[in-house]
Picture (cartoon, one colour):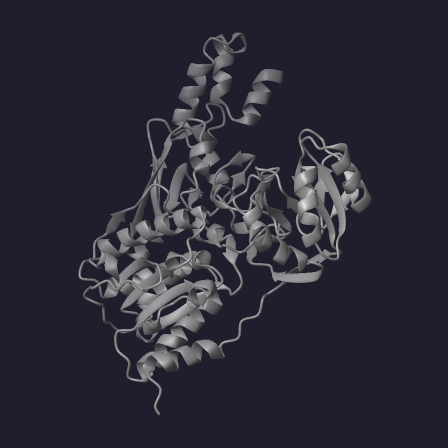
Length: 510
């Protein structure tokens, strides 16, 4: 029996082997801390196995209960404000020197503010939920490895420059509170990261990447699947991205789709969705049956809005890329695209892949506009400079993390390369004159986006003594105006502002 194009494509998917780049190891000896009232703790103790148990007893309890606890566990006096930190194998409680491997918290409120609790921390305040919690807790003794889901490229990061904060999208979106800023530097705790991938999708530069699998592995696998589909005589393939968890819930009509299961639905973003269309997919479906984390829901929807704006700008229907939720995949009728598939290779650079995909789609688009306006949080756009305010101090140039803003080589100019701009807000925060604004948009023609253009230029001011160029005319005018009332710059002393550094020293000291 001959396999269908879909089956052959899925075989190609299975033939690709993807291994984690690196692992994070947790070691648990079963040292468990239970937090709760004496009544709650006594109720749960018979369910716990092979643990060395300590108890932080909170609330009132009878002397009989206290005695029973004292005979069964290591009893710790509870502080009024219990502060926990850590993860499986390394939990700490403020004010207590002992470390714990696991924590079972029976209080009404969780000790952690993050949406995702650390691995090894179990919070339950209803008796009916205890069996669901106790079963996995009892199994967490030993050494456990999980993939290190992310890679972070510090040199690409737009978080800060010169102790001024710019982009913080990864920090704000992380559900596990695994990403923090320490001394203006991004730090990621691999023990807290649980692989949702939201940070990778929102990162404008590609400094934060999902690496299990890598972007390049995903793209190479995707292109090979679609190539196999076409070689087998298939037409108009529909690619369906879902999580591995959701793959098991898919209904029986999955033979209509090229199913691409991922660790997390938000481990890939716009550059991969657009690449699927560029590689020949007639439609792309983002499917989930299990509800997403609130942060992942936000990440997915915002990325989808920006991608739809770029597709619509070229005349493509939004239904070429859509979400489907629930047990059954919702079919969306549309006029499916058909054109020569792209052949570009997989690459780990997020922005390069995005532009390659859009460039290919643009060739076959029914509309080929110059640009499209995007949402304010998009990672593409221009810098606008108010010429009447800018003094060409070049603070923005020194703060720009991507090199999008550049000074003139031999004259006072501010130049800009739009394809490099991350819309990270660093230049806006740095500018002392508040002369800069951002405008989110996407220029379709790559050669124009990659070309340098002048944002502002000023006339050169020459030293009144030696004629050496050393500043702009506007900067001298502003300095003279600001210092006109200063006692040190009265009379002939004001002329020193019109001198270069060398001539100023000669004038002052002889």
